[in-house]
Length: 180
Image (cartoon, rainbow, N blue to C red; front, side):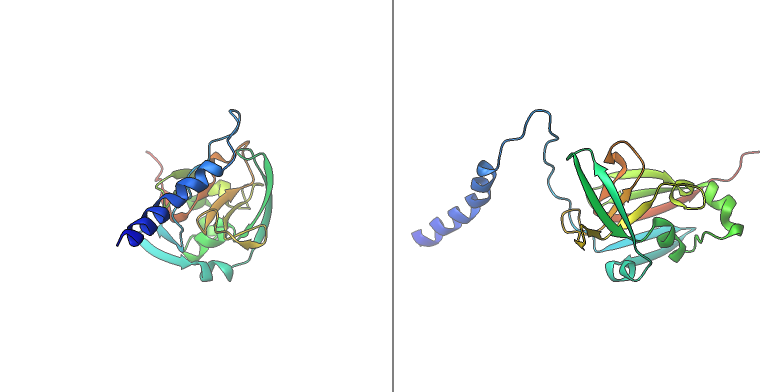
């Protein structure tokens, strides 16, 4: 009985020992955040229609590789995945000429498994309107992206990755009607 209790105590304290052994952070470095819960699919809400794409569905879409600088870590990183515009097209917002006005008048709220969210205009995610690339990253440095919650939202624009999103789980498309 005592051995079982001692083993349970050692197992419970083991993570604390690992944390204590980790190198201390410098004052000028960003503090380490706890990893986000992994996302295994992305739910897209567009015009009242719900579309769910799994990692397997995302893999079969055309893949784009982006090279970005992560200012939080001061490192260059490589991510691969489909363009968000291709993901939204699977949900019905295709980049066709007849949808240009809809794209220009719509925005996307992207939400992660940790409830962090970011706002994008659909136009800044659409290659016909923007030079930046916004992808649904499923690979980092050529490997499955387990560090970023399996699925991330990464963009090539911006001075720092404040609008990157780990553990991407939802894309909610909202369209505005013109005012009279």
